[in-house]
Image (cartoon, rainbow, N blue to C red; front, side):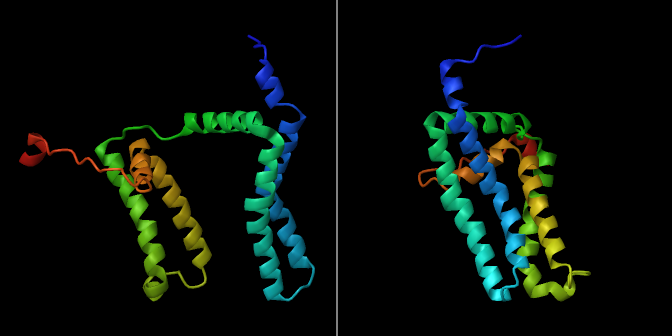
Length: 181
């Protein structure tokens, strides 16, 4: 079945939306294109690092994202946000998870945080850590992100509540069956 696009959708997906989307994609992938070019220009290491950092932070966060949003306009940005979050929502974590899944998720959540915190102090105790710090860091980050999906949507709400001043924790009462064990 072919749906007719409404006037708002046509306006949101016009040339401004396409240009804004292109600028948004440039802000996401642009640093990966320009940083290697800066590295090949033969500048001293400190200057190359400074320029690369400036490209990554300045271009990404300030200039292009704001420009992309301004070019797309309010309707275009709302349309893009609805499409992206609509796509992500179908792959998002379930709201409630089983107790076992929650415990596994907590282990996956805590281990990378603790290892990232302790590794600089106890790197001599971790086999294979010396020389592979980046690999350990990337694997830890991936495990941390995976843990957020394993923990489920209620955990996301708990994390969100950390940043809301008036949020209160509601700790469920222990059931008689839990107390008997």
